[in-house]
Image (cartoon, rainbow, N blue to C red; front, side):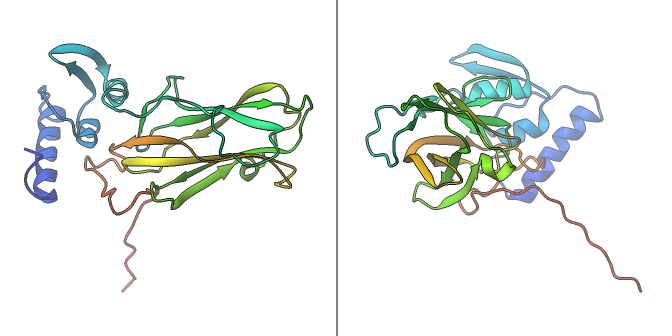
Length: 239
């Protein structure tokens, strides 16, 4: 039903299904690949693959499992073999991957999901470096930068960086619509005066549709890749 008709018709269908399940207390079996509608309507779900039950439980868990199926995106990127890199090499990036809030490694992330990016590093000069900043930049596949974030922006400076480890960047709600995005990474020191490692197009992330705004409809991602939390109101002028 939701595959046909305009947005107004789809809205009426979703409203009726929600009314039947919530107000009338009846169980509605909703079968779909449309994640925004599933997320808006369902409290629990069952994931099937070739007639077999792969996962069942609360809807967020089932959607997370579904997102890991059928994608060719890498879950873990080994950056150590990349030769096209700039910087002194005293600190180098070795790996990149994403995890959800429960620590599960992600092949795909859905819009609005809480996630963390992990940047594995290794210090090669044997020293301890201060005022180190790790940067993640997300770009479109044509190279347009959508956002850029590093630990300096939050008043956090990594000091005594030595040996090997991971920098973790957490996003409470991923503000990207569905699509494939390119990830640029870098590590600098002393407020950018020392450039240790720069990797362009080091990795990519796949983002899937979800009910970001809570209305059960997919976002027009082909036009607008970035989503912003906010609300509207109409304040009428006094007569």
